[in-house]
Image (tube, rainbow, N blue to C red; front, side, top):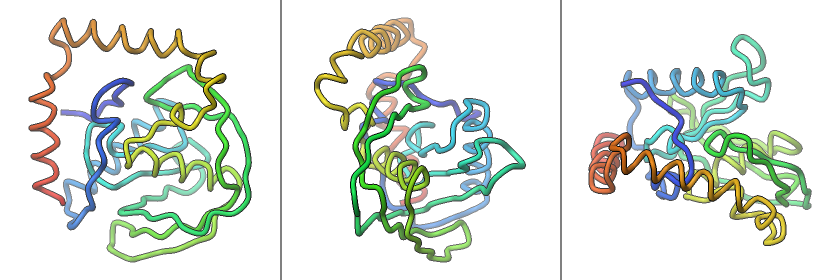
Length: 194
């Protein structure tokens, strides 16, 4: 089945992703499809659990368009050495149309692996640092709304409730897997790659 971007409050968005221990042709295909879904949704980053997969993996292209910018794949990423502080508006493909101010470190060091199993490191700042931190949060089950102030969150409460109502309606209509089916799906993927 083709990958789809799941929406808040889908439980996989709160699942802590597991370390990837192997890369195969299927995982490479998934990464390609993640870029495709990201571009369709006009995003610049997408984490695996946003497409229902419990894997420590995200993709980034700051240009947000196929054929432009650089497509980067981050397997088992780790962030260290945060420096400075900056507030900027963020959004999320799993909460379409919702934006809010988030304070994050201005600069971070990233360490990750590419699909060839090669480790890479870099010091990131600006938008790149923010996107990488946002996507890594996803892998830990953290949403950008969790990092907003109480006041900013309260101003967006109705939109969040709308997402929750839509999810519950779809779940009751049988359009979404049950909690048990979702847990089995996550366990299956973890057994294959983690």
